[in-house]
Image (cartoon, rainbow, N blue to C red; front, top):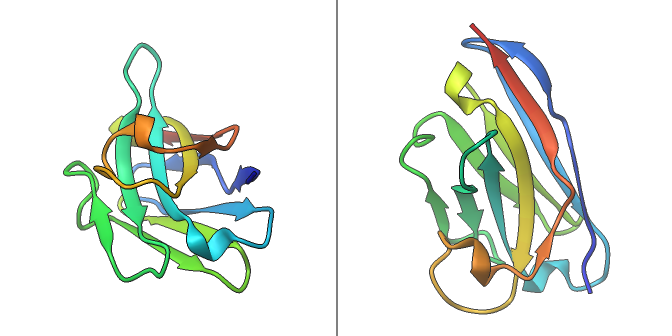
Length: 124
């Protein structure tokens, strides 16, 4: 069982930056691949980024490539999402998720555990 708690969301102007954190409970964090997803009102949950358990494999959604960076610190049981050059279309609730199973990182159903989400609002 893994519990995930996101933090770092907030209100920022277009072009600004935020860093989201996701703290995980448990001693087996390093065995989980981690992902970030987001969901805007009226829209489906969207893949943002994922990182393998060791940190050696990283994927990004097309809409955030070159602007967002995912990283993890297994010693601190934490995964991060650095978001730069934010745009109004990045406004959403951001969720972190953990998984041990294999399968395409892009699909939310492949993740076993989810945090409660943190709101990111980008003003124009």
